[in-house]
Structure formats: C-alpha cells, structure tokens
Image 1 (cartoon, rainbow, N blue to C red):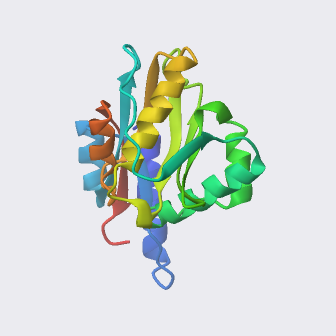
Image 2 (image 1 turned 180 degrees about the vertical axis):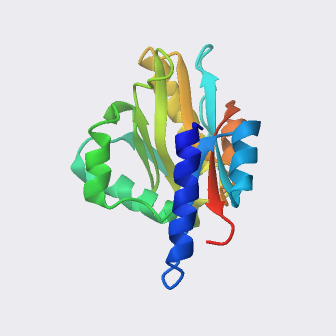
Length: 219
C-alpha cells in the first residue's frame, strides 16, 4: 500500500470520527500477508476482518468425473431463462455471505458482459424440476494463459451436504478441459460459513493469499 493510500485511510477514519452522529464502517483493502502494510493499518486503528485467497489448479491430467447426488441432472446454460434460474440459486446461496448479498439480476447480466462469460462451461443443476445449484464460468483469466475463472458457485440450502457443490465444480473442470483450457482459478472468502475453502481443496485446488479487508476498530 502506498503512502497516499494509507493517508487516505487515515482521512476516512477522521471523517468517521467527525460524523459520529451517523457512524459508518470504514473499510480498506490491501494485499494479504504484507508486514509493512499490516503494521501501518494497525497503527491507524484498523483491524483485519476478512481474507480472500486465489485458488487454482491444473486441468492436466483431466480432472476426475463428478459423482452426482441421486435425482440430480445438470445442463449447460442455454438461454436467458436458464440464467434467471442460475441467478435465483446464487442469490439464495449468497445470503449467507458477508458483503451485502448477491447483485440484482440486471446487475448480474451487466457484470457478465465484461467477464468473458462462457455459457457452455456454466451450468444449472436440477432436482425434481427445481434449480438447486449453479456455476458461472468465464473462459478467460487475466492472470494466467489458457485458464478459466469460476465467477460464482452456489447451492440452495435444501440441497447442501450431498456433494452437489463438489460435483458442479468437477463437472465445470471437465468442461474446461474439453474446451482446451489448461487451468482453473477462483477467489474465495476464507471465512465463508458454507465451507467453500474446504470444498475447493477437495476439488484439487490450492490457495494463494491475495487480499485482506480492514475495518476501523472504532467505526
């Protein structure tokens, strides 16, 4: 973090102090595991509240085939109706996530336009005619060549604990490999209450610390 960024963090804290009649959280992001930044932010009264890791894996050799829970079927996203179903699943799944919930459907569609969204690699899982899981994949990742990026993965509460999340991820890896991609990546909140980090590790992904989020302790 450059000096100007730390100075900005200090000014934000002062603004919060001056507006105690309407206090609000003051958050700052930094690279993870950077001792000078950690010391500087702690001196300014910030504490680390979240960490985000990059998780990645090779698709060579081809990943193992998924084992689907009984009664579940899966298909690639084919149209706007499928996307709407995927959004409904993800919106519910991310209600457990710290950070204000999932974007509206309109914002979701807008964001897809700039991510390299790949419908053939993105799927919805169905159980008894109801969409219960979804994964949204981009076929580009700026940090690595021939690498796909998992934008979102979610399972409805009623379908959790049956291995559906792992099956969706392994299925996505297989689709990526079939498309000629050599790697897969995603970012994860290490404090995920749904155990996302453990799920990704079971899928063969390894973690690299990336970002930390800090908050003024008295904000």
